[in-house]
Image (cartoon, rainbow, N blue to C red; front, top):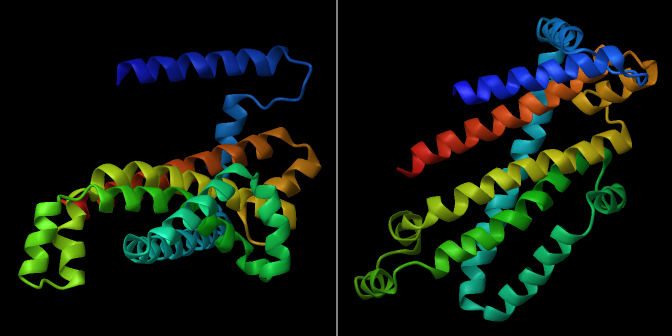
Amino acid sequence: MLKYILATTILLFFWQIIAQTSYTPIASPIATFLQLYALLLNGNFWAVVFINICDIIIGILFAFSLALFFNIVSVKIPLLHIILKMVVLFLSTLPWIVFSILGLLWVNQASVVTMLAALAAFSHLYPAIYAAIKNTDGRLLDMAWFFKISLLHRLFYIYSINTPKYIIPSLELAIASAFKAGTTAKIMYLIYASIYYELYNYTLSLYMPYIFSWILAIFIISFCFKKIIVFNLKRFLK
């Protein structure tokens, strides 16, 4: 813990030195944190954060549902798994700006963020769920088949055994990718009532403490959201 505190202190020190000596406009850490404190006292800030988190959660839940459904089907139909592997490769290779442009043609502007978050999360969740299913102990599956245990009970009591070590790391990547994809869409379309819309507005004003405080806010929100989801998932799977 002390090492992290020391490393953070060193980074803040160099940030302060660069802000004072650089010819490029850079907000100092003191000015940034003061502005961030002002943001935290603003009720509109929390409303914007709530709207953005809801968009991301809906996208991730939809992606998880799709990944689970397609994995159950692809176990019975291997050809479907090959097709979905190609889809995942396609999603993970192309930059999200491409899907942002296509999203404007496929769905309405308000749903673009949810769609991109779902696509980003799906590209991580589908391979992880497939790996968890394929690495399930075959003897347990044979026993479940012999005693005619329902699919729902098999999912909860057999397949879930391997779930944590495959799902949790991929979920962290899925949440990070969902936030990045959402950032691309919100900045590109300048969707109102989004943290990225506010960041863009302050960028036009070139007031650096506002810009840096919003960047720091986006980082903190993304980091805390990811940790909270993963922590609760670990507790649920125990």
